[in-house]
Image 1 (cartoon, rainbow over the protein chains, first blue to last red):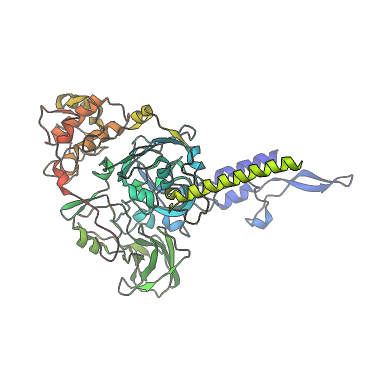
Image 2 (tube, rainbow over the protein chains, first blue to last red; image 1 turned 60 degrees about the vertical axis):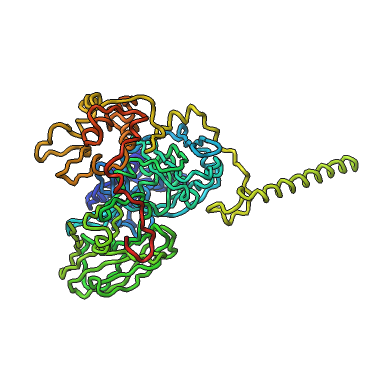
Length: 420
Length: 205
């Protein structure tokens, strides 16, 4: 009993606590269950005093046993950076293209609602032959699909100082394996009328978030997803079900989805008029759905420290318009570009991990990457975006090439570019 | 025994014949099977309807269907005035959005966006950026005030909308907003809005 309590206590303090040598030593069991031969010759288990181990050698100490829910190594502390309304994925801490669910970025407009899946309903009405209500259990009965897609906030661009990490610059993008029902399956079930060209998607949060979406996207590849990375979708990502529009700006993928209304015109909601729109020269661009191709080197990046020698440059690239076909890396401040290796499988509208081997000889330089997608779009420089949209460019749909400065002493710093 | 067997066989033949007809019928019913996104490789016949879920009642639709379109579709009965809206704003909105009549002290920051455009500032607000008046009504009704979303009556929403449009110099002080007058308002920013013209390819837009 004492031993069990000890183990349970040992389990607790590891979360977000720095592991010191003292803690490791102190955590070593002073009492252990050992097998002993009794006087009758039977093998029995008894508690025995053990000397405090003066070593952190894991081969000299029995570790904790199985647990109901696993957790990260106490030496690993990946975390989101949060503000009042959003939190950002630690891109620099990820080794491949998938984002652990608890590190998926967040952007909420009125917090995360608590929704009982037994009570939650999805209403589909408007220009349909059969207005229907689906419980979550109903949605799960329809033929399901599982697909891997990135999800990115269209306001995913920060700049301004050299001491910024990939997470701070563009941590509002994440990737999950999503499972749910194709929206086309539900459209077929309710009988969408031919004259319906738009639909309104509405959330069940306190913002009662709404966006208008072309019906064509609903038939193409839109999903209503109730699972993320193999388990029920997280509350922050829309539990019990959200709309997922592959490759489109995150805000359109309405979380906590409760209603879809088919219509012959867009509804011009606040989030598609006064927000998520941006100046392009003397006009304001609206219904800007697709996320253009983008990439970022996540290693080496601020605050890494380089040693001269071989460096594998690593990062992610993605496009809302299809597959990434090439990622090019420059290690001479953009003068020459070389193709990076793409981690297979390269998926449609998905983060694609890239790697490029480089020998750093100790010279000051800049490294950067640019993505090319299957439409032959090449990730632009900030200047190209300004040339196309004007100097009043805003933070929406900004996907410029991100450069890192490598200093002679091996310091890696972000290269912020100002334009106003 | 043989007799009973024969009868069974007859039933079997009829059943088989019927299922062939059913399958052929489903096969000819193109919308039930053709090009369902994500199911190209699925060889199973889909029924015309899975029958999951239940029909929505008009009552349930009425409770949830709160959206308002620029053409006025969805606007409820009721009305509101600038004067009534001012009183509601000062009680329920000013704490976050600030006073519309008094300027903010220098350096002060509001917890919520400024709602009135002025000619000296580039701040995006209702007067210089919002393309449709219906959006003001729809947004206030569904999610404001922030601490008590959805708590205003339709008349109160009409009134606050009127007050904000007046403060932005869109409508006159004696204007009355209702389902008929609100869709007639033309917002100054409407002419600025264009649809997305990006479509991939080599050109940066």
